[in-house]
Amino acid sequence: MKIVAFVPIKLKSRRLKNKMRLPLGDKMLFQHIFDKLLNVKQDIDIYCYCSDNSIEKDLPSSVKFLQRDTYLDGDEIKGIQIYESFINDVDGDIYLLCHATSPFLKSKTIEIGLNKVIEKGYDVKEVQVPCGSTSIHGDRLLCDKCLNDKKLQKQLHNYLSELDRRRSTSYPELFPVVYDAIHSDS
Image (cartoon, rainbow, N blue to C red):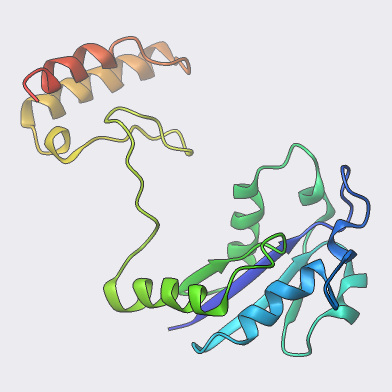
Protein backbone atom coordinates (compact mmCIF):
# COMPACT_ATOMS: atom_id res chain seq x y z
CA MET A 1 0.00 0.00 0.00
CA LYS A 2 1.48 3.32 -1.09
CA ILE A 3 0.81 6.24 1.25
CA VAL A 4 1.48 9.69 -0.19
CA ALA A 5 1.50 12.82 1.94
CA PHE A 6 1.41 16.16 0.19
CA VAL A 7 1.68 19.71 1.39
CA PRO A 8 0.40 22.28 -1.10
CA ILE A 9 2.29 25.55 -0.63
CA LYS A 10 1.73 28.97 -2.17
CA LEU A 11 4.67 31.23 -1.37
CA LYS A 12 3.06 34.52 -2.40
CA SER A 13 0.46 35.45 0.17
CA ARG A 14 -1.67 38.55 -0.35
CA ARG A 15 -2.54 39.12 3.30
CA LEU A 16 0.75 38.30 5.02
CA LYS A 17 3.91 38.86 3.03
CA ASN A 18 6.27 35.85 3.00
CA LYS A 19 3.94 33.97 5.37
CA MET A 20 5.43 30.55 4.66
CA ARG A 21 8.97 31.72 5.32
CA LEU A 22 8.20 33.61 8.53
CA PRO A 23 10.01 32.19 11.56
CA LEU A 24 8.05 30.16 14.07
CA GLY A 25 10.45 29.16 16.79
CA ASP A 26 13.70 28.05 15.19
CA LYS A 27 12.18 27.17 11.77
CA MET A 28 10.19 28.72 8.99
CA LEU A 29 6.41 28.13 9.20
CA PHE A 30 6.27 25.58 6.40
CA GLN A 31 9.13 23.45 7.78
CA HIS A 32 7.16 22.34 10.85
CA ILE A 33 4.68 20.16 8.97
CA PHE A 34 7.45 18.35 7.10
CA ASP A 35 9.22 17.59 10.39
CA LYS A 36 5.96 16.13 11.74
CA LEU A 37 5.46 14.00 8.63
CA LEU A 38 9.03 12.71 8.78
CA ASN A 39 8.41 11.49 12.34
CA VAL A 40 5.34 9.45 11.41
CA LYS A 41 5.96 5.72 11.95
CA GLN A 42 4.18 4.58 8.78
CA ASP A 43 6.18 4.49 5.56
CA ILE A 44 4.99 7.47 3.52
CA ASP A 45 6.23 9.40 0.52
CA ILE A 46 6.23 13.09 1.40
CA TYR A 47 5.79 15.79 -1.25
CA CYS A 48 5.96 19.56 -1.26
CA TYR A 49 3.57 20.72 -4.01
CA CYS A 50 4.53 24.26 -4.93
CA SER A 51 4.89 26.35 -8.10
CA ASP A 52 8.05 28.09 -6.86
CA ASN A 53 11.15 25.86 -6.82
CA SER A 54 13.05 28.31 -4.57
CA ILE A 55 11.48 26.43 -1.65
CA GLU A 56 13.33 23.25 -2.57
CA LYS A 57 16.58 24.33 -0.89
CA ASP A 58 14.77 24.66 2.47
CA LEU A 59 13.13 21.23 2.40
CA PRO A 60 14.45 18.21 4.30
CA SER A 61 16.38 15.94 1.92
CA SER A 62 13.83 13.12 2.10
CA VAL A 63 10.93 15.37 1.05
CA LYS A 64 10.21 15.28 -2.67
CA PHE A 65 9.56 18.55 -4.45
CA LEU A 66 6.92 18.52 -7.17
CA GLN A 67 6.48 21.75 -9.09
CA ARG A 68 2.86 22.53 -9.83
CA ASP A 69 1.45 24.84 -12.49
CA THR A 70 1.45 28.52 -11.50
CA TYR A 71 -2.23 28.88 -12.38
CA LEU A 72 -2.96 26.85 -9.22
CA ASP A 73 -1.71 29.85 -7.21
CA GLY A 74 -4.63 31.97 -8.41
CA ASP A 75 -6.95 33.60 -5.90
CA GLU A 76 -10.01 32.01 -7.53
CA ILE A 77 -8.58 28.47 -7.45
CA LYS A 78 -10.42 26.07 -5.15
CA GLY A 79 -8.54 23.59 -2.99
CA ILE A 80 -10.15 20.66 -4.76
CA GLN A 81 -8.49 21.77 -8.03
CA ILE A 82 -5.07 21.63 -6.38
CA TYR A 83 -5.78 18.23 -4.83
CA GLU A 84 -7.05 16.76 -8.10
CA SER A 85 -3.98 18.08 -9.93
CA PHE A 86 -1.65 16.44 -7.41
CA ILE A 87 -3.52 13.14 -7.52
CA ASN A 88 -3.29 13.16 -11.32
CA ASP A 89 0.49 13.65 -11.05
CA VAL A 90 1.32 11.17 -8.27
CA ASP A 91 0.03 7.61 -7.85
CA GLY A 92 -0.94 6.42 -4.41
CA ASP A 93 -3.39 4.23 -2.53
CA ILE A 94 -3.88 6.66 0.33
CA TYR A 95 -3.40 10.42 0.04
CA LEU A 96 -2.67 12.44 3.13
CA LEU A 97 -3.25 16.16 2.73
CA CYS A 98 -1.40 18.35 5.22
CA HIS A 99 -1.18 22.11 5.38
CA ALA A 100 1.88 24.17 6.23
CA THR A 101 -0.40 26.47 8.19
CA SER A 102 -0.94 23.70 10.77
CA PRO A 103 2.43 23.76 12.53
CA PHE A 104 1.05 22.39 15.79
CA LEU A 105 -0.32 19.18 14.32
CA LYS A 106 1.37 16.24 16.05
CA SER A 107 2.96 13.25 14.34
CA LYS A 108 0.93 11.01 16.63
CA THR A 109 -2.32 12.58 15.41
CA ILE A 110 -1.31 11.82 11.82
CA GLU A 111 -0.45 8.23 12.79
CA ILE A 112 -3.82 7.75 14.50
CA GLY A 113 -5.64 9.05 11.42
CA LEU A 114 -3.67 6.80 9.10
CA ASN A 115 -4.33 3.79 11.34
CA LYS A 116 -8.07 4.47 11.14
CA VAL A 117 -7.84 4.42 7.35
CA ILE A 118 -5.52 1.41 7.10
CA GLU A 119 -6.81 -0.85 9.89
CA LYS A 120 -10.48 0.09 10.10
CA GLY A 121 -11.07 0.88 6.44
CA TYR A 122 -12.15 4.48 6.98
CA ASP A 123 -12.27 6.24 3.66
CA VAL A 124 -12.97 9.86 4.51
CA LYS A 125 -14.03 11.79 7.55
CA GLU A 126 -17.72 11.15 8.06
CA VAL A 127 -19.99 14.12 8.06
CA GLN A 128 -23.74 14.29 8.39
CA VAL A 129 -25.72 16.26 5.87
CA PRO A 130 -29.46 16.33 5.27
CA CYS A 131 -30.83 13.90 2.73
CA GLY A 132 -31.19 15.73 -0.57
CA SER A 133 -28.13 17.95 -0.10
CA THR A 134 -25.79 18.55 -3.02
CA SER A 135 -22.18 17.37 -2.82
CA ILE A 136 -19.21 19.53 -3.82
CA HIS A 137 -19.28 17.71 -7.16
CA GLY A 138 -22.96 18.50 -7.76
CA ASP A 139 -24.25 15.01 -6.92
CA ARG A 140 -27.46 14.58 -4.96
CA LEU A 141 -26.79 12.95 -1.55
CA LEU A 142 -29.44 10.55 -0.31
CA CYS A 143 -29.89 8.63 2.93
CA ASP A 144 -30.01 4.81 3.00
CA LYS A 145 -33.79 4.87 3.35
CA CYS A 146 -34.16 6.85 0.12
CA LEU A 147 -31.53 4.83 -1.73
CA ASN A 148 -33.29 1.54 -0.89
CA ASP A 149 -36.84 2.67 -1.62
CA LYS A 150 -37.98 1.35 -5.04
CA LYS A 151 -40.86 3.86 -5.23
CA LEU A 152 -38.48 6.72 -4.54
CA GLN A 153 -35.96 5.43 -7.09
CA LYS A 154 -38.66 5.62 -9.78
CA GLN A 155 -39.67 9.13 -8.61
CA LEU A 156 -36.04 10.24 -8.61
CA HIS A 157 -35.49 8.81 -12.09
CA ASN A 158 -38.49 10.77 -13.36
CA TYR A 159 -37.33 13.86 -11.49
CA LEU A 160 -33.79 13.68 -12.88
CA SER A 161 -35.12 13.06 -16.39
CA GLU A 162 -37.25 16.20 -16.03
CA LEU A 163 -34.20 18.16 -14.87
CA ASP A 164 -32.18 16.94 -17.84
CA ARG A 165 -35.04 17.91 -20.13
CA ARG A 166 -35.08 21.42 -18.68
CA ARG A 167 -31.27 21.54 -18.52
CA SER A 168 -31.70 23.33 -15.23
CA THR A 169 -28.73 24.11 -12.97
CA SER A 170 -30.77 25.92 -10.34
CA TYR A 171 -31.82 24.24 -7.11
CA PRO A 172 -34.50 21.81 -8.22
CA GLU A 173 -38.01 22.70 -7.14
CA LEU A 174 -39.31 19.15 -7.55
CA PHE A 175 -36.96 17.39 -5.14
CA PRO A 176 -38.51 18.74 -1.90
CA VAL A 177 -41.85 17.19 -2.90
CA VAL A 178 -40.25 13.77 -3.37
CA TYR A 179 -38.13 14.21 -0.22
CA ASP A 180 -41.09 15.28 1.92
CA ALA A 181 -43.16 12.32 0.75
CA ILE A 182 -40.48 9.84 1.83
CA HIS A 183 -39.47 11.54 5.07
CA SER A 184 -42.93 12.53 6.31
CA ASP A 185 -43.16 9.38 8.46
CA SER A 186 -39.61 9.68 9.87
